[in-house]
Length: 316
Image 1 (cartoon, one colour):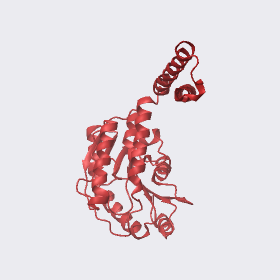
Image 2 (image 1 turned 180 degrees about the vertical axis):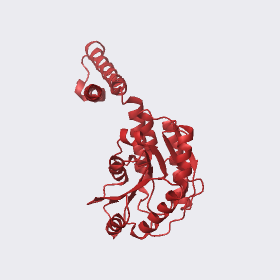
Image 3 (image 1 turned 120 degrees about the vertical axis):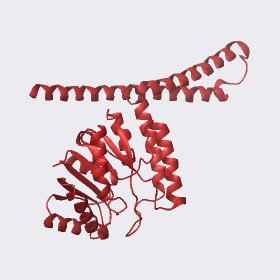
């Protein structure tokens, strides 16, 4: 199997059959062997019935059904685990991504030796105020944070080498940052191709305005993991030390002031500096504990990876 096409969907019954026919026409014309995996993320319409019908009528059609809506990231992860093709394509089910873009993107990935090639919807047929402008701000922030030069991180149309999707784990709302996650795992050859964006033909978008808030929060999480994921004590230890020094400084000041400068003055516990010192020392201690726990968990994870790698090597 050369290609696995993974399509996560939610309530897209009207477009599934049309999309499947479009995929068949585009790929079979190039003589490509392929499979299509439909991931039904808890649809409440007749999407699953459409998928089962396609699976019974055509070869190499598979369906995975979630009993409730878990999100696009979980749907993609399920598809990544099931995919058998040497190259994996992801695309949306709303007919806004064109399957005709797959062969040239695949050719570019092969010819340039890329790990991932991402689509760039340079001309979009979406709301300017609620989608285009927020999307540009979001992509700008993602580029600055990740140092990956992509114009459209959230484009659903992407082509991966099989090794990439089998080496990463997508969770939460991290589907927007799969190139960043892949780069963190060592797959740094990432390219981009301008693709044609279609206006939505049926229904409406399943993503609300809160996706941008979630997207920026996830971006902060990824930035932290990239910078401090291998050395959590560098972050927690720095702030813990700062808090402890601040607390000790206030404690020393209160002690000297009480013993030598104003021994008959008010009680230490009546002064605001006492509570500042107490709070900062408690925070500093907690940050240090968080750093130690992070280091211990990281070491256990590294030992587990080393054991698995050693076992696999010996087996071969």
